Structures are given as C-alpha cells and as structure tokens.
Length: 268
Image 1 (cartoon, rainbow, N blue to C red):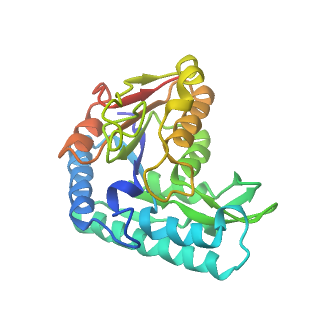
Image 2: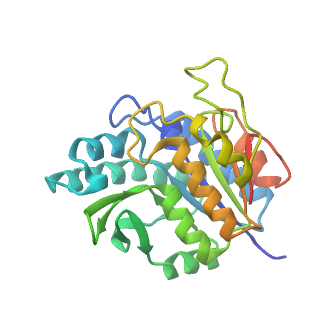
Image 3: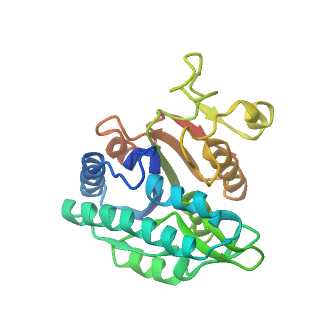
C-alpha cells in the first residue's frame, strides 16, 4: 500500500489564547493530539508532517521588536525564538503523551531567507524521519534574512517550501473557525463561509477576506489563502483544506477521509 503524505497545521489562534501573551490552550492541544493518534491507527498508510503556529507565544515579541522586517534590537530575535520554542515543547509533549511519535525540528536551525522569502531549508532529516514512520513537527519561527537581517517564517511558508520537495497529497489548515469567510465571523454576522476558492474566485474577492483578529505578524487569513493558491498552482494535484479544530473529532475524520469536503477547499 502506497503511503499518503499529509501536512497538518494547528493554527496559533486555535492552540493559544491569542490575545493573552504566552497562554496555551492545553485541553485543545491534548484533544487534537489524541485525534491525530486515532487517525494514524485507523489509517496506518498516512505519513504525517505536522506544524503549528506560534500564536500568543511568538507573535507578540515579534511585533514588539519588528523581527519580521529586521531587528533593531537583536534581543528580540532571541526572545521570539525562545517563545516559539516554549509552545513547541508543549505541543511536542502532548503529541508524545498521546502516543504520536513526534520529532520536533527547529526551522530556524537551517532556514535561509532573502527579503522575507524562504529560499532554503534542510529537507533530508524530514525525509528520513518520514521513512522511519515518525512524525516531523515544525512551527512558525524566526529566521535570518540575507536582505533584512531577520524575518519570521510562518508554518504556511515552511509547508509551502517543504511541499515542493515532499509532494504531499493533502494539506490541512486547522483553525478556530470553520473555514475561510468573506469577513471575520467573530466580528461580522453577515460573514459567509466560502466552500471553494480557486484562482478566478480569489482575484475578484481577495480584498474582502478578513485579517487576523489578534496580533499576527505573518499576515492573517488573506496572506494564508494567497500562499496556498500559489502552492496549488505549482502542485495542481494538492488538496488544501481549511477547517475547524474546535469541533471534536473533525480533524480525525478529515485525516481519515480525503473526500470529507468540510470547511473551505483551495484548488488550482
């Protein structure tokens, strides 16, 4: 049986209290870890690469020190790196406790950026871990930048780079809303869920997509959708799905069933 490679991102707004600095949501993290374990038991042919956002751990110090566009005080780079690492430890421990053989990989240890673009990152360790049936875990992180000095690489940016080499069949972006909306559904009662986004649709409606409702130095939903559209144009067989992590067992079901069209599908 051929393995299906699936990338899964646990959003920072899902696994942290994004308005309260350095505050995790441990019960949600533990439940998601349990769902991931259950899915791998039901679908042993899946090879998972996991990632998570930094939420209120990394975004707030990154904003204070403008790490995303070049530090004026390099202490901010160190503080942001440490904050992102602390959340990663929480997620790694929860996955291990649930029985998921997660192996944390620090993106900034090998990432090289130029004017905010990730131009290289170590691939071979991830390939070997997947080959041994382990679960690589990456996360939104700081990075050195040849042009700006420093920048921030979101999990979506890391996934986009890795996908070009690892060729996953699916990529799941798991957040605290049901998918991509025409506006922030927490602020606008008229916001509507967009079940499918492709190049022709986004060109006409991109300006209506909401930004993040809290501190997010990586650009919020609009930049995520734009990046995923760029990726599916390069990898037209890739299926990108944006879905809620607050609905119990939805992540498990989505991992097990590639035909479960819940949330928003982003296609070429």
